[in-house]
Length: 98
Figure (cartoon, rainbow, N blue to C red):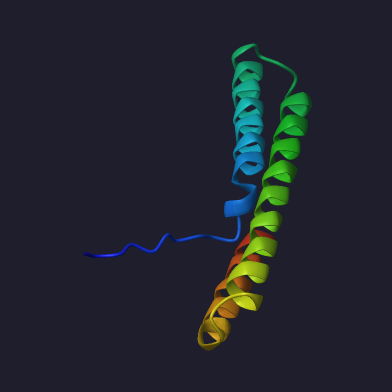
């Protein structure tokens, strides 16, 4: 009989709050869409977009922190270098957007 190993990720323990935060961000994006449909003032729209970007950055940083704790520090020692390279690549991509 084959056994299946359940894959867990660093964010597994905080998945529900993470999903809740992403749903809130999704609502903010829909709000921006409505603002454009309603011909709202440009700066007001940009202000809301900036808030969405900040919220996404916070989510991304939390995921990176979880990755460092779970996949690098608490992960397989022989994969630490590979996982650290992945982490740093993700950090560089995140920083480039701003």
